[in-house]
Length: 178
Image (cartoon, rainbow, N blue to C red; front, side, top):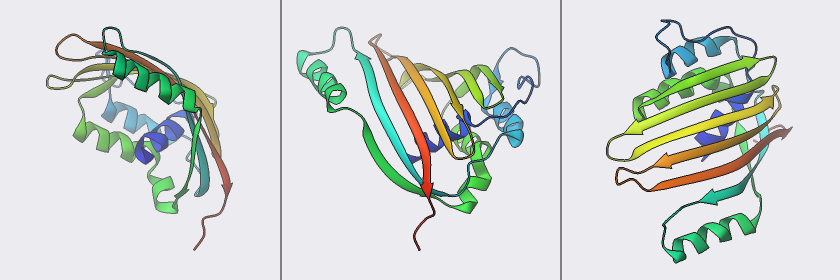
């Protein structure tokens, strides 16, 4: 979860950086995004409060028990937690996270538009044993905060679908203790 929150934060703190599709093949690999992310605004080290809210979940054809569980997740409301972002983690920023994601997932960006602290991106991940997911990310960010809306459309290998929308906000609230 922490890695996902940091990815959302780092992705939202992009500075203007031109077209990330370095080889012009129409697909923006995680490596290409990582290379372009060197110019991104990096988050400041410190203590952050992250709020994640599930806005919508649709699972057509799922058992009633599963659909009820999803409705319960939405009705709980925003979930908040605090974490410490070290100087080392802040320095690595999105570039290192993108490189790590490339090792673990078959992901690339269809779109990666960033300008002046805004992000509009579409990332797809596909693994035969897990299925395919397409995530749109739109938001804004600075070195001490970010706001992002993410929508994921997923399809399992057996054809089942799920759509999930969540909002994520990060805010630096002080220095880390210790």
